Image (cartoon, rainbow, N blue to C red; front, side, top):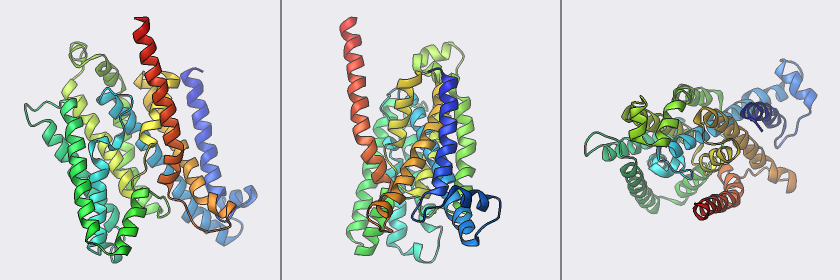
Amino acid sequence: MKPLGWAILLSLAAVLAFLLSIRLGAEPLTTAEVLAALRGEGDVNVGLIIRELRAPRAVMAILVGGGLSLSGAVFQALLRNPLAEPYILGISGGAAMGAVTALALGLTASLAWALPTAAFAGALIAILLVLKVASAADRRVDVRVLLLAGVVVGAFFTAGMSFVLSISDARTVRTAVLWMMGSLASSDWSSVWMVALYSLPAAIVLLSLARSLNLLAIGEETAGYLGANVERVKLVAYVLASLLTAAGVAATGVIGFVGLIVPHSVRLSVGADYRVLLPLSFLAGAVFLTLADILARTVFPITLNSPTEVPIGVITAFVGVPLFLVLLRRSVGDRTGTGVGS
């Protein structure tokens, strides 16, 4: 299928997933009720469920899913590794450390925005530390050092988080673990606007870097000869992709595999031209996370008649792990076949 066909298909899938997200839930609604509520008619309670609960949650799934997938594609280009993902550079560790610290200090009991703010602040600290280490030698961003710095910074924050949890009470530990599994349950219009404020400008700039990322894939020296400002592109791509990830993590917790599986699957379908790969990755990530959220909040109510909601990170892991193994096997097989043929 041509890229235009994929774009049309994914756009239609995103619209359908959005409508399904509004209709399905612990309290199933009919299409007529949904349409009436969107027009401002029908039952008042149904209107409140759709406009104040399900609609912002569906929009959040699109923003976070698309953002994680887009940032994953950018990191894969930046690190020149098709199996890189947004959390590989320590962002999730910093965010988790900030969130756990806020919970342990009891800030979330009185301040509704304490948890996402602390998580975002922790992610920013991790971003700055990694960038500082990666550019310490000669002001150039060495992607190899960037990767190593991300792993080390992530391990440091994970150790700090483990220490805080070890001296916290059981309630704090349970809340922290649930947050780290990811959830869209607390999404409202104010949090949606805050995520959009960071995500949409960052996404637009990253999409504009597609040609430069194509040149970087050839090699930094060649990209420089062809007119790309290599260091500026690497710096902007790293910072904006990290901010995009940090905004999503702060709002919904750590949701794994979206930024790894989705862009890699899109690459296998349409190729490695980032002018096509980046926008399609955003659309595919939005569809993937929206459908995962539908499963997260309907699997128990439908099968067990229970209002319990599964953390969305569990759903993405259940889907992502086997899919990752299939993609990894395919990637290794492709490389082996190329090596034998050459």
